[in-house]
Amino acid sequence: MTTEACLTAGLGWHGEAGMRVKGHASRLFAMVFALTCLIAAPAGAAEPAADDVAAQQAVAVLQKIQAAARTLDYAGVYTYQQGQAMMSSRIVHMVDGTGERERIELLDGEPREYVRHNDESHCLIPSKKVVLVEDRRGDRFPGLLLGDSSNLSTFYQIHTSGSHYRVAGRECQFIELVPRDNARYGYRLCADTETHLLLKVQVMGSHGMIDQTAFNTLSLGEHVSPEGLETGLKTDGWKVVQSAMTPVDLSKKGWRIPYPPGYQPVMQAVRTMKHGRQVSQLVLADGLAAVSIFIEPLGPEKGLRNANEVASTGAMNIFSTRVGDHWLTALGEVPAQTLRELAERTEYVPPAPTLNN
Image (cartoon, rainbow, N blue to C red; front, side, top):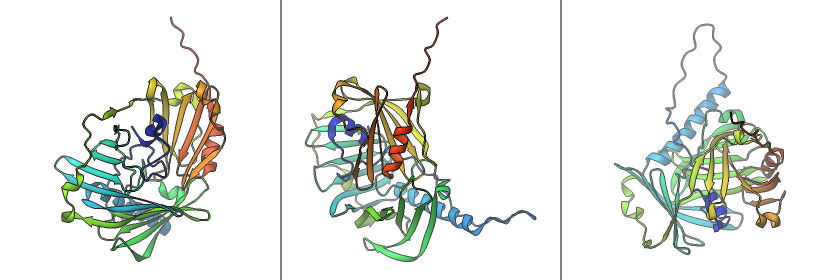
């Protein structure tokens, strides 16, 4: 069950930092590519342009950043900042003989913890005495890539800064991703120069920084204790909630959803929510940015929902509209206009009934 499933289950529009919905689906392991040297072209063949080579090298660095978040032992406190509001979380991540283990504890607002072992994550909510069993949530900081990142340079100008910076007492180098269109935000990333671990990420809009997440303290390697992976919460007797999820092809169900340029589907599923209510979810991604689309049948309680209005929290935007006898909600850390155009251009054409012989 993802954070969006928590949302639709009535747990509120709150994500990991308590201020936004983060994570539209389980982020896939990025392939670990080496930063290769240029291979001499055959005689008579055109050599790649310098800009293309630089973009390929920058993408390789991004893939190293993603791999670092999955393979290193690290622990620290990071802060999400949106305007004057700041929310902090403590993270412990280790890799042992059983795979990845991780614990994230929210330090501000309502207490909440995420305890993960490989692909299974438990969201612990003390106030409700509930354990939500989630899929992998690799999008949590310091995760980065989502889906296929090979075409990032098609939709972002990627620049690597020659100067170094310091975050949480460690040296890092900035990488800037400038969008080539208005369908996505930009990013400024600062990666550790020694380990490639992402230390700071800023989401950039047309008028400057929208929000940022950065480590305040950080320990690496042998300085990370496995004791930090254990929760102090006593969950005996708590209710365990795990929504059923079934893969689906929404286009075969009659949905005509226009993907924004560069975005491709990374997940389609039907989730069974409270009281047996079914909600379809489609996740689109361009390698960095992601959009989740939720489709649910129109119900008697939905008449009071505000349609065709944008709700925003930092970089997160939400837009809902009615499509036939369904409500469609699009949300993501993308410009509001991207969500509006996607939702308002979506059509539902019920498939023709199957004739029985």
